[in-house]
Image 1 (spheres, rainbow, N blue to C red):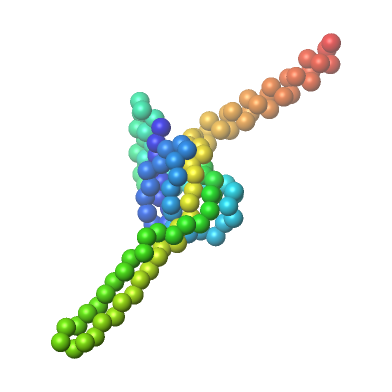
Image 2: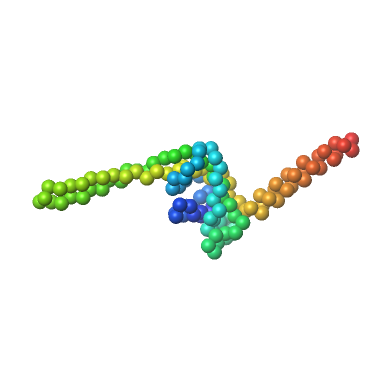
Length: 128
């Protein structure tokens, strides 16, 4: 299963357990973030295309840390005038590991089933 998400003005193709570098966000490493802008989802048999976003779909990720991209060097040179100007830039990124891709409705139903199982167990113990 893979999805295409939008964050920081860019689109990323993500799968479970993949690492992506997104535009820097101010969070601590180890925190969980949710991407609500899911544009496309494909589970192998079915594809969902959003208009513009797929409703009730969510991608969760864990912040690994900060990183920087490659250095970009530019040079402005004027021949015969002995002028040159050199500058560089390194873009800062936040590295995220995708932990979960799924529907919000599926997660709610799994949570409700888990609560039902927990509620049923004490009743069985009381009858014994």
